[in-house]
Image 1 (tube, one colour):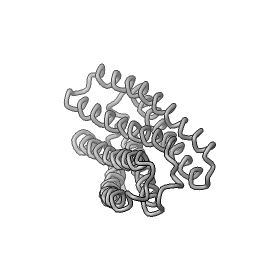
Image 2: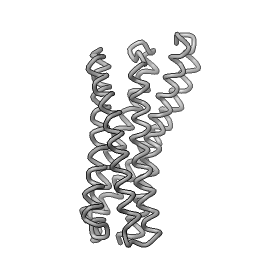
Image 3: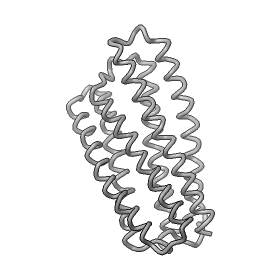
Length: 224
């Protein structure tokens, strides 16, 4: 599909684009480490999984520094105030994805996932995959705006919306199973941890969807 002509790199400074690329690359690394931790947990390689989960926390802290620098570059630019606001909203929501995945990583560090009933565990795994896939789609869309492939970026954003709809369904099913299978979850703190994990994963997909909508707004308002 032929992209629109104006690139995000045409309106942002070279330093801002470079920082945005680093910010997105860091989010990619977070997704990769989190995905690896799930694969390792599913094969009972708990020690190796915890190394990857610790890497998620480390990367998320680095992401905060990149977000701060990116915000500084946007605020100090000569862009129109409304464009600055749209860009900042995108950055804030994209950063929130890392926050939610970080919290999910904390919960997985102490949650004995293989002791969770299979029905709930499968739902958590699906929600995790939706989170990672939606994040990859968002990163793809953002990179395409820098290259001027804005029509393709909009197609990516449509897919994010579909992932978010599915995540809502899985979240609802998981919460229902938590109630149905409450007697099988011991100690009670396991139910709390699963609930929090489910919530953080679902909210990470929500954040992807909102970030995607801000990116769509930037494309349709400023890159046409």
